[in-house]
Amino acid sequence: MKIYNAKDYNDMSRKAANIISAQVIIKPDCVLGLATGSTPEGTYKQLVEWYEKGDLDFSKVRAVNLDEYKGLSKDNNQSYAYFMRKNLFDKVNIDLNNTYIPNGLEEDSKKECERYNNVIRALGGVDLQLLGIGGNGHIGFNEPGQAFEKETHCVELTQSTIDANARFFEDKELVPRYAYSMGIKSIMQAKSILLVASGKSKAEALYKAIYGEIVPSVPASILQLHNNVTIVADEDALSIIKEKGLL
Ligand code: F6R
Image (cartoon, rainbow, N blue to C red):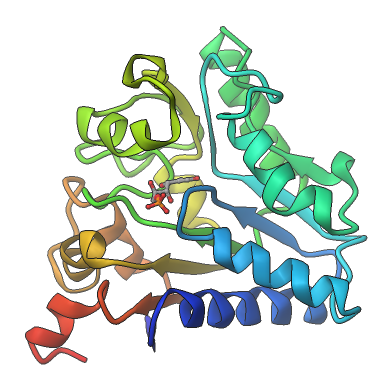
């Protein structure tokens, strides 16, 4: 694992955007695995800036997102499909037909998960998977305790994730209880992984993910078994690792 220590959120975003840009430049038709949430927002903003300057071309890029809330349509402003359009897809020259995200409105979980697994396979797998990390160590919506061997599946969200995501909704009651998510197995099949983390609320999860035991109770700990993982984290997210003299 390569760990890059960023000064702050902006520095983390720039460093992460640099790694994604390098992937797009080296392989213009690459498959990017993308994440939503607060952490990558700055990374997407930076990519948009470089695109506007003429330094990046997304015309051949394929993008496959990690997850989507079950029950939300792609036009619901809390859906991850909406987030991706707002933060990246509508602002660069990516072809929307080359962007993929689970269909939150498909009620038949088995059918939707199979469809999504087939989408990822047909794309030939993910070249670079961007990940955030939950305060409880989740990646995608793979919550603590779930089997490592899963591909796309329907997840019942834990209370801590519902509480963390409530900040985006008018009312906590509106936070969906289920989501479709790529599983740990799907994530581990990516050729390379870039995990971004910012803030003290991620410090413990990041420490356990990198230096703790590899256990389902810390889903991100499985990344220790992947041979091409880059972590870009700011001072606060790295604070416990630094206190322990590990970096
Ligand atoms: C989002 C996702 C989640 C987030 C995680 C951190 O697509 O898969 O695992 O990466 O919940 O979220 P933020 O960045 O909002 O702290």
